[in-house]
Image 1 (cartoon, rainbow, N blue to C red):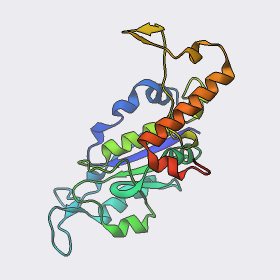
Image 2: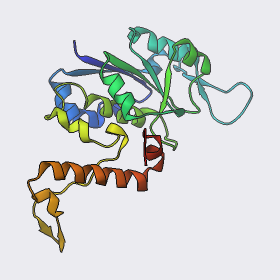
Image 3: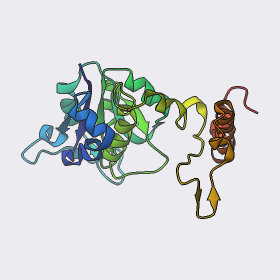
Length: 229
């Protein structure tokens, strides 16, 4: 049985978008994973399929109704984690991608307006995730990002399984620099160690570069590493 993603959105035409291309697209065609998209507006109330209403307590904007969102989740709810993409969510990490890739799939709720009524978030035990410290117009782009990061980790998607082992955030470090031909370009040369054929020296150089880059660019990651120095 393939890994299954179910996306709930007010803009179903956004999907599969970039997920239909490259690694994710080929894996989708090969049946390694599947994608079904639900238009939340199909579950809207009244003649105009209303999906939102004014917030209790006042304030700007509209809030997506709990009864509408719950009705949309119901037909696809099957025990898979239900993810709500929101700026207030916990920041999505590579560790989360690995965890989700080991499961059967995900249900992703893409919010719009001011967000989704808290009651349905709690009733459906949604996990709230953010893809960064910024605000998007809706959860769709965040859902694409999250799905791409998970799908590429599914068995058979990447050509070389070891590719994921050296990537940024694997082992708590950012990735080391990469070089390819030509050996000299625009007056810049490839580090000698990478052309030495000494695999141990190459590994040591890459480890040192990863550590230095992480310390400079992401001191938060560096500080979180056990026994960091």
